[in-house]
Amino acid sequence: MTANEWAGLVLTILSILGIYLTGLRWFIRNEVRSIVRDEMAVVKHELTNNGGSSTKDKIDFIYNKLKDE
Image (tube, rainbow, N blue to C red; front, side, top):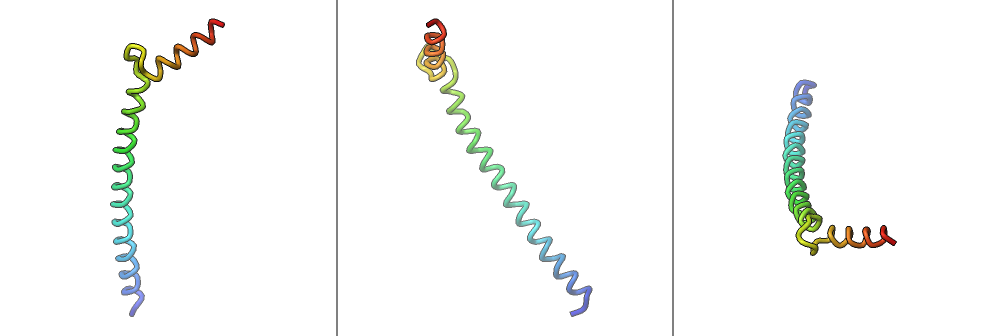
């Protein structure tokens, strides 16, 4: 094989590898974004005031109780 053929082969392999890694990166980024969005919705729900039954309300109650002492 000549130098030009080797260069073409190497560039082809690098191109295929680059396309694969870009697709993998895109897939992982979207999956992580989806998981984080779902988990953050649960956390946000727990930290939202809803008449005294949320975790935030309980923490605020304990904080205010300790603060008054």
